Image 1 (tube, rainbow, N blue to C red):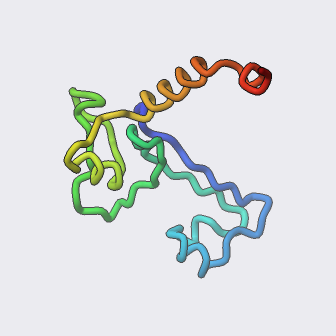
Image 2: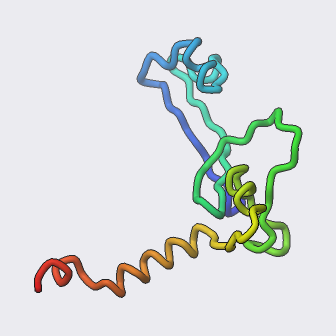
Length: 118
């Protein structure tokens, strides 16, 4: 499985499943999420925000890829991050880098007990 792929599993073996009208409302095929069914689908993870999406197989336009994250084939990025990436003054900061910066900031600030105690 590629690095940016995941999997969503909805298990209704021990439940009544989703009602047909609700399943259609949230984008599921009612035949796949009924009573006793297991629904499995691949997901894509955005390398800029960390969000996960279920690919729409009826989509006709190209999915966005960031060549700065991986200059060989590009990493998948969601439509919202692609919009932000194309704005003037955008600074490229992948999700992993944002997490790293936050953890570094936490380490610099010290432990919570040191911050509370004078």
